[in-house]
Length: 455
View (tube, rainbow, N blue to C red):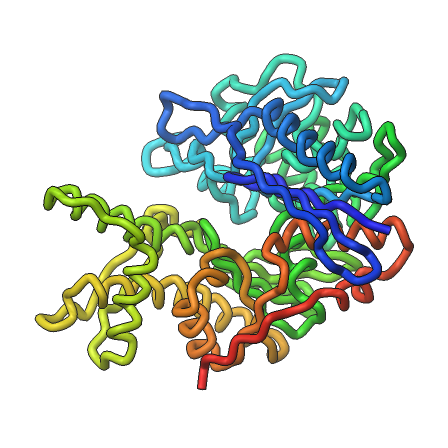
């Protein structure tokens, strides 16, 4: 028996085919997410759900044509963003992605829409959260006429595959929209009333891993799980582990024994009544791309062309790794969800360390340090964690970044064998639905490559 996992990312869409007896990844297809909609408004980040649906079907059709022994399809995708659908389940709007910044616009002098919504409701709200976006759209008469529900892009794809007119949304996605009571596992009715958001626009919520139906050829389709949780389920074989992910953004995730409040950290639903604490820098791995772009512009200014920069940057940073007078780089170049207007900085600049090599190493260490500080906040009220797991291309492709993380956390680093952790995790969850196996037992199929670098 085989299953498919589908991950609808911001920049790529990935499908994997997994053998359910061995956990072996048999085939992977990754396509660019070409759905971005150009906008004259600099704060808008929109994607076309029709293009996304077409790309998903192309991947699924290819995998299903190659292997007839597929029993289930697990779905995940980018969280926080929303689209509006009509009573038939058809899209009435673009996808307002998690990167949309309309929530940072001012609703009144000195106060943004996100801050206003947080003040009205008592919930920590940020730009990009689905209900922050919806709040802005309400205030500016931008909600499409005939809108019946809002949902995430993963919910839309899942319901479309089984031709359901109404979305059923998992707690992991529901909580990402904001104004969600984790203890009651529902949107907060009082907070909605205070913010003039009708509860009728919100989808039905469940905290269970359930099938939402079958495709026309009889394949079980899972409810969509948030991509952070799906990546955790595809990377971590047992609790007591720290998962650090560095890709375009970065995240650090751990399971926690109970619902607790941790400053600067989101508490998110997982499965079976468990939660994960997630720290989510807004820049993360993109900080390295920003530095690369800086070097490219510098080369252009000098009348030359820069090639193979990531390799050269890593090599340069390695050459000053043990320098005792480093540059200290704060990589919060896009702020944080709690402080959107804070910016990064460079300190400890001296006559000997103001070099491209030191700057490169400082950025890499800054990416790690932002996650480590979040881990410190997480580990104080929680149990100790004994295993460090690294995922995302930023870690996978950089032995130097692997060494930085291993040394900073003082743990050997394990890297999941298969790269597409979120789609792989949903393929495993598809196995749960198809076979009735417990999710924790299924996660034992995860295999690792060990990286011992911290000594």
